[in-house]
Image (tube, rainbow, N blue to C red; front, side, top):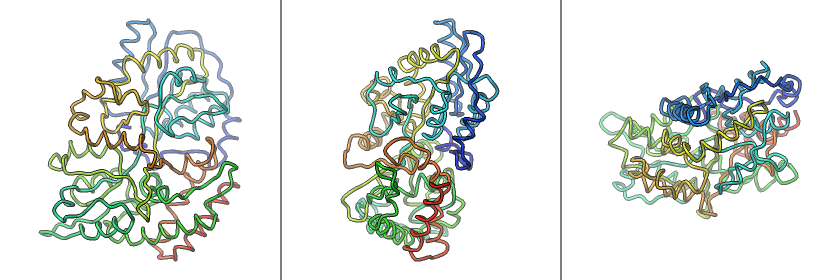
Amino acid sequence: MTNEPKGGSPTRRSVIVAGAATAASAAFPMPALRAQTREIRFLNAEPAVDSVRALRVAAAQYEKEKGVRVVIDTVPSGDAYTRTVAAIRGGRPYDISTLIFVAHVLTLANEGQLTPITDLVNKHKWGKRILFPVNGQHYWYMYDYNLCWLFYRKDLYDQAKLERPKTWAQLLENSRRLASTDGGSQRFGMATPIGSNDATNWMSLGYLWAEGVSLFDKDWTNTFASDENRRRTAAYLDFFGDLAKTMPPGMTQATFGTITAAFSAGQAAHAPYAGRLIEVLEQRAPQLADKYGMMPYPDSAGKAAAVNHGYDGWVVGKTAMAEEAVRFLEWFSDAHYINFLHSAPLHFQPPRLDIYDDARWRAHPLIEKHAEAVKTMQGFLDDPAITIRSIDTEGPVPDLRPAKVFESFVFPEMLQNKVLKNMPSEACVAEAVAKMNRVIAA
């Protein structure tokens, strides 16, 4: 995304906690097929100027070459699913929509509102854990990863003669050592959100995935409730409670922009984020644009590491122009996809593996300048030791149960119980397990 990742709105993934699957079947009648107007309606959820421009240039060229008009409507990413549903209800569905949550794709696919694009998806080789088939069919053309990892101030590490941490204890010690008050300005060791919002779900849980915590097994049993996962999570909370003491005040209200501002202003020595943060440094703090390092979330023992999952993609609606919309996506993926990626060159991490070797993609000045960062990002996909997980992608197949856990802020509330209420870690975990069970059963 070209705004703050996963959208700037308070709730990026408005699902289904209130029974959206049932609501979908009741409220989404199969749309009446509109007359063949030779027009494709495309709902874009990347509202940054450069991204909109890239799509409109592609649309103009497609009309010139194919005689088919492509109308680009743009909304904030947090509004994409709502607008998609509203268009279906209104009897004029979008031919192509941007969706940013696997549960939304699952819901619409199960309601018969999407056209499979399996042949198009299978034309390419994709990175790990980025395709989410539904009943053996692909409905989602993924255009980027929004992986979240940890940034650190490499210059401060060099000055303090610190090594890149491989364990929670080392990260905590480094955060403590780099917190300082100098000339009246205060620097904190870490900036990480702990509020009941998407930012916390995305930025603060990578340590759990590194530690091997899981939420569901292949039979959809709540494995988070197991003794082993309770123990691992309690240890994480002990660590996080200490780490929170190195953070700026107000982390319960922190969102995506709060974290980028803290790191780019030199207020925090460590911060979680995606490639967007590098672009922010280039724009707002160029003096720091060569002073950052990147690393995955460590585990407690220095044996494993993880990044938190994120993703965005396009779907084709079940419309009269669906066949033409698939042709447009195929044409776009060859002719203009790289131009679109260049509209956020370090934030739009390609999910298609062929892009990394494409000289056209590598020719962007920021990709060339930050080649080491790009190598690290690609390494997250290539390294089998790096785990890529998130709440909403837990489980053996796409399903609404992890989506409900995500939307209910089970884990942000667990962090708040530890950090704000100073509850014993085991009690925080027990409450999270109980809430998770309630949410799944609802």
